[in-house]
Amino acid sequence: MSRLSASALDVPLQLFVGDVLDAARFQPPKNPPSPIYVPKPRGGLWTSTWLGNQYGSAWVQWCLGEDFCVPDDGMWNCTVLRPALDARVFVVDCRADLEFLVEDSTITDSIGGVYPDFEKIATRYDAIRLTKKGMRATRSPLLDSNLWGWDVESTLWLAWKFSEMVPIGHRTFSTIP
Image 1 (cartoon, helix red, strand yellow):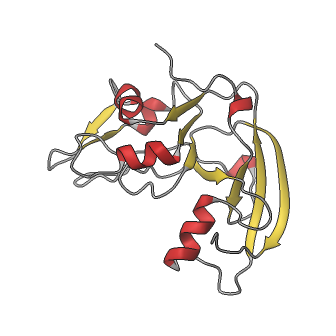
Image 2: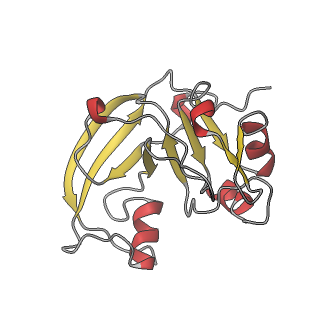
């Protein structure tokens, strides 16, 4: 049973905000150390769907709303990415998707929490795309496995799989009303 996105054509353009991107500096994901695990790896690349020049992305919107990591001058360094057609993207749109993803790829921390083994998952998929619906279904820390801390629709790239990378410079964004 495959839960891959039908094709990379189904993955919309992605926005990365942060340092200048360079494929040579990409770091594959590494599981964080125990004793208490967080369901986010070290490394990889985080993006969110490009919402256009006015709003940026769900990640930008969350940051603006929470006053979190907003650049001091309000200018975000932005790059729009087009996923490669051969990218193997796993889409988490519901709880069952997450259960399938981690079925044989989990880590248990020192207090019994069960989390995705991102290093193992990276051998099968190039990215994990969490939809807005999937985020709501998987973020409870009370679930055996969860994506607590994935605060918005986003894609975690486990491999560098982009056909196009367009730096669009420093931008300001408005909050969605």
